[in-house]
Length: 388
Ligand SMILES: [Zn+2]
Image 1 (tube, protein in one colour):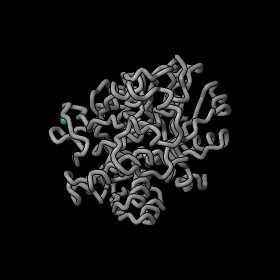
Image 2 (cartoon, rainbow, N blue to C red):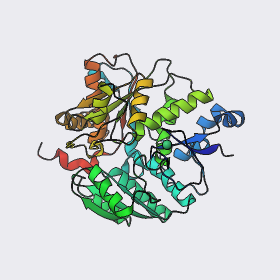
Image 3 (cartoon, rainbow, N blue to C red):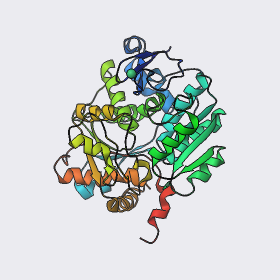
Image 4 (tube, helix red, strand yellow):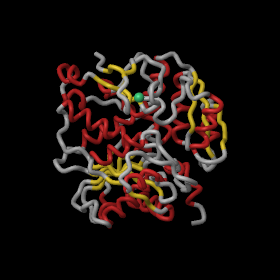
């Protein structure tokens, strides 16, 4: 049975049918969010059934936009590791790492692309394009190859060496663009046309959020403490934050939530912290950051098309936003590796640096449950470890 009903604009509430090729709101260009018949789902499916089955992202298909053939490379069902030795360094007893590095192509981007590429097949689109800081481009390339979809990726300067070659390995056309991911996005618009179907840029298609929502389902399945756990997420475009909050909100509406909803914490680099700045200033939207600079390529993102959604999720969850210095990132990579055996990407390690800052200023209590989301594998950033 299908419970997916279509999409709704996150700003003006315009409703878009399930099979539409529109990737964003035709009226106001805001992000679209998928809508489900939650009442119908609750009548037919039990909570235990929803959480009990194995099988990665698609095990949660009742709360995913399901179409025909589901594209999969085995994404999801990543481990939530109890980080005892790392936690002991700060005196946090219940510290966990959600290790998304174990996904296909080594990052959490796989979850979103599995669902986004499935949608493209369903609506009959056989070409896809997007700007990427690296990991999303790799994921789109791999899922595009598996689905027989032609891909074009716009990679900004500063993307780790080797990622372009790896994208080409999957058959993707790679365009290198000077500047940041915003410049890469502008080049895509100039060449591909903003209205074209097949654009899978962040928040310009509605299904990447749905795929990433499964991180929230998996955490909710394992952590059901009555006090709110902290979830620290390295944040660029912000799909992860929006997705986790949407997951918990849907579970709450269904009456399937056993523990408390989490408090969300955005972690950015001090060299590129548009969301942190907007959150602390009490803004309702995120203004672009001029001259973004950080070694963590995945969060060198000067703005977001979903600023209002991200800020709302932070405030509703009684969460926060913190910026960390680049100088602390590689130290955090080394600490996580040597304490826990996890080789995190600098973006993922930023959550540990952010955790220290938030414990230091009293925002996080040492008795809280804390989950660090390591979004990607560190091995593609090995060059940052040289001669240091
Ligand atoms: Zn709208």
